[in-house]
Image (tube, rainbow, N blue to C red; front, side, top):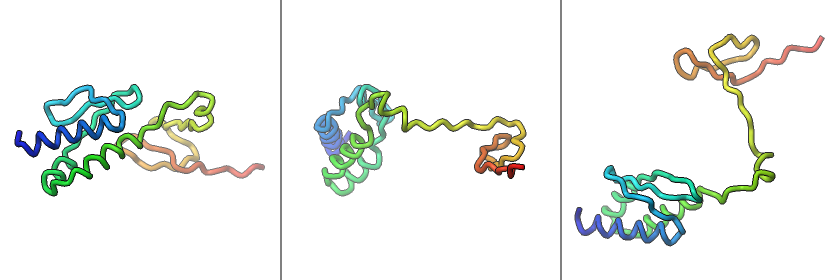
Length: 120
């Protein structure tokens, strides 16, 4: 590992800790396991590493760390969250009568539009 790569790793760890993200482990493949609000997340800083090594610009590290942290909100109280949850039943491979379907992969279809039958 070159001195520039070591500097990148140090700046990345500092940026993550600045935004309150604890690093659980650095994996052999270059990915990093972090803790976001009690949930483990696997991040891959390869593109940021390349940009940093190419441009020698540490702002890309801080912007990336900030973006990761902004994607995860604090867990919401169930009473507030339950109204925002949508249930979507996925179709099996059975015939779907009057539903229009789009193939997803061979043998699996997803209903996209329900054709209403006029009331009589």
